[in-house]
Image (cartoon, rainbow, N blue to C red; front, side):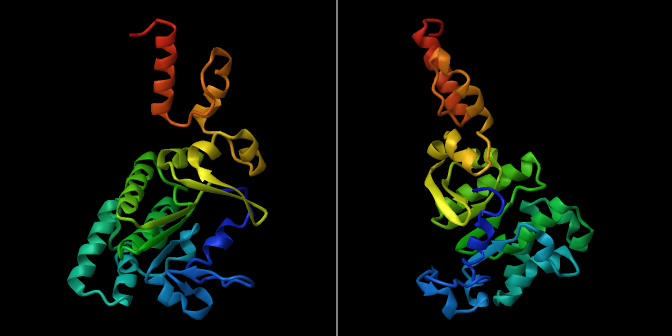
Length: 243
C-alpha cells in the first residue's frame, strides 16, 4: 500500500520478470529473475494487471481464460473444467462466447483474473483487484484469498482499498517514494494516523469512529466490526448496563 507513484506496481513487476533489477537481486523460488525468462517465471507467478486492457487479447472470454492453460500443456478435459470453474466463480459464464472488449471495465478485470486463477499458480500477484467490483465480487475474492492462504500459497496485492484490506487482515507493507516506510500487521498499520497520512491513505471507517470515542474510554486501535462489538460490550459491562 502507498500513495500513487510510490513504486508499488514497479516492485511487483519484478516478481515475474516483467522488470529486471538494475541493482541487487530478485529471486523467485530461489531463481534469479535476470537468469530466466518471463515465460518460465509465469508458470509459478500469476500476475493480474491493474488495467485489464494491457492483458486481454483473445476474441472471446472463453479463449482468453483457456490461453494460459493451453500454453502450459494442459489436456483438453482439464482445460474445459478449469475454464468453466473460473467463469462460474467470477460470474462470467454468460459471456463465454463474448469478446472481452465488449464488457464493462469491472467485467474485463474479472476476465483477466479468471485467466490467471484457472491455472492455479503458486504465487498470485494482484494489482488493484477491487477496482470496479461490487461487494459480492469483493467478498468472493476475499474468500478465495483466504483459501489460497490455507493452501500455503503466496498472495501479493497492491491496493488503495483500505476497507478490503481490513477484511483480509494481511501483513501490510507501506511504500513511499520507492522505499518501505512500514511493515507489519494490519491492526498496527491501519490504526496509525501518522503512517497513513504519510502515504495519503485514510483510516478505516470503524477506526475513524473509535478514534473519536477515546474520551469515553474506548480504544482507538479498532479496525473490524467484531472488535468494535467486543469493545462496546466490554465498556457496557464495566458500566453495569449489560450482563
